[in-house]
Length: 278
Image (tube, rainbow, N blue to C red; front, side, top):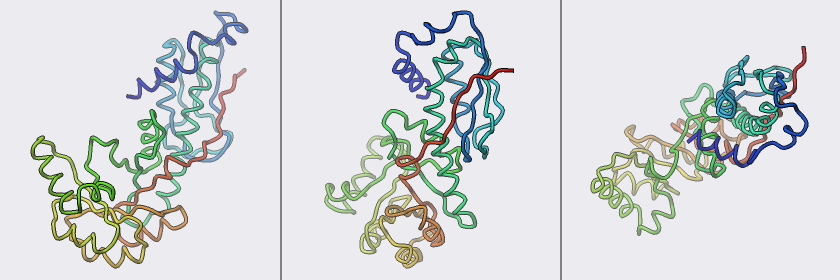
């Protein structure tokens, strides 16, 4: 999937060719460029940049100086590229676009992971990603120290409020799901969302799930209901969680905290690719 994303991005940006580079630069010209970090944060996308560069022009020489997941500061050089000058210019923006977004996601994820230190809670991403580049954004979450939730609709069962309402209730949704998995011989984890203590009790009475999502519960409400949930069930807090209050959710003892903000509202890290002269 990563290679498919790269192929689409190259076609989108370069198309039939970089006419500016071809107009200005002799075809045999060579040069070196450096990836300059312009603000503090967590670097992500170095391995992706290497894949992009090698896919576009295998003759380019890539030299990583800082690896994915490293904390960087303004003025650091992440890597250098050497080779055909036209190729370096053509691939510049594509590399920056991905790395700036990935580093922004990794930086924000790492800030949240740091806030959760000392608790057992792990921060999860969601499906609130940019269409077409989910693999890239979830990769960045993992680089930042977060945990990837389900990748899509196909690798886990997540019964949410609308599923429950359409199915006719919690019992109907769980039983239908179990029957579906048995019929189709699929082994997928089942998570179910509950909106209040009454729905939670319905789930506990029926059983047959792996994880219970406590949706829009306050930290106080979570503390109240967690003792009711047997240890066989994983627990997840979701909804209304911000960087300001996430620590209070973690201190409840919940296993996971999911946050769409890891990917859907992130400030890109400021990076640039500059020609390098000795």
